[in-house]
Length: 428
Image (cartoon, rainbow, N blue to C red; front, side, top):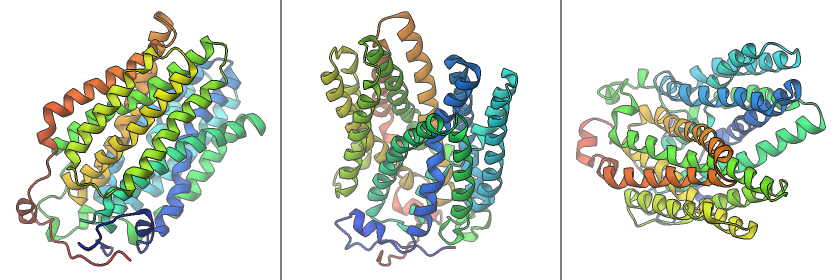
């Protein structure tokens, strides 16, 4: 079992400096960043290559969506296996399978293979996508058990994810348009292979597998994260966050196309992403006094209110301003949700829980893209903005109704189950 680096009760001002000085953190952060970068490159690289070889954006989008849905459906099972057998045992074969699947998809596209072959190859490509982000979050949980730095770590990971999803598509687009249409997927496969294997090699920081956790975890061994009611509530709520990402991608593209300025799409979405990153940085630097359950409801309420104003925006400046506010509300909701997972589930199910949330965002995004596209085709330009509004309002109603399920078990009950014994030592 890797040594825990739990903060002492004197750590009342959590910050990024203290977080990044956590002993051993950089050994998994650096390879983890390299390994998670391909996750943001896969979708756009697939679209650009398949569109180049088939001449159809519809076909390209369908193949890309297949990878996204496959990832969302299989990610939780990957997380469950990682909790039970260890991250390394799951990562190594997963990375190898993903690399082979991506290269197979690339070859099939370049050789004008039948469309059904592309869909067949897209399934293992998405299903084997390494869940590096959830695995990094689980490693922070090992390092920071019971520490106020957990909120800071959740914020740091949220900002890292957002930075990845800003940088990844730009990098992939530059490779596909400036080097070769297949360069994006080939680079994605290479980064996954190298970064994933380096991350897997850091065995000292991975959570202890529940299969070998010993007597102290005997009563929670093999228990799925879905057995926790609060996790189920968070999964459904995170579909609402996915609806914002997916709905805005389609609606912003349609809006800028309708005003004859398609190039503004990247600017407007970048403004949304910037709000997300900035609020994530601030959120992680604050020592919160409000209970996370209440923070989550407040964050989702603010997200629903701001997202409800998107469809009424009739100018670029107004849409940019509202989009910035929507992005600002995303990070607190994500960060608080991930922070709650650390309190709701035992360490032996944490990676699985994180992958359920990540998969919920991806699944909500895929559904939102489909629905928003239909609304744009059948109604008016900008009708896709109704999707983020509907998704977030439903999430708020769910959280308000079931907020009691987000309350962590009492300390006495946790200790009785054998997972609450923690010995504080210094983070530095």
